[in-house]
Image (tube, rainbow, N blue to C red; front, side, top):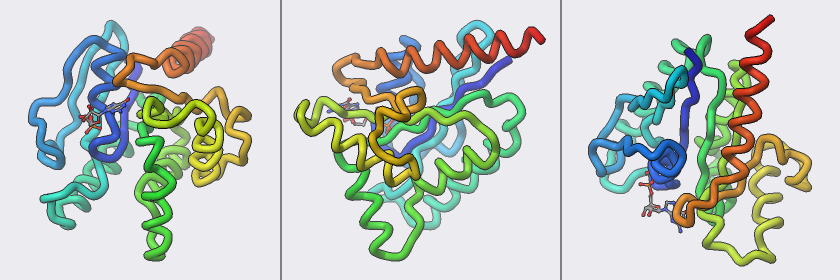
Length: 194
Ligand code: GDP
């Protein structure tokens, strides 16, 4: 079977997105940082995996955050063979600010580390830029340029339209992400025929 994993920091809206996409609820406990184990949803021959949220979580010790990261990395390495795609969910309006906070401490931002790690393993990554309902329409393009630029994709972001999906789980606006996923599945299934 084919697996699609969803990764992202805590609170970016990952579970809201999965609920919107699949019509199913994944999260067991609501408290961030509690779950260390990936949650699965099966949709015919597709396995949807909700990875634990990573990064800073208030009330969660730094050590625990490292454990979460290690578990995610281990899971991805162990299952890389069947993972056909990773959807990395980010909180659009705060992404650049958070990344720059890490950079100012001379640390590698965890989102960027995860993005590069997935690509190094040869996993197809789709960037889901969530919470676009929080930015004004005229600011959307520059926000997306800023985010893609931090991830090593030169602006304008529209050059990367086949891997970047602005969205709002809250408003149910996930059309571009659905299209990208559908296209990739289609390509993958066709490739598997030969
Ligand atoms: P997770 O920790 O990444 O699984 O995030 P959740 O799905 O639990 O959402 C975290 C918070 O962000 C909740 O308060 C959601 O209501 C909110 N949220 C999720 N998606 C959106 C969105 O598209 N726009 C806005 N404004 N808030 C959102």
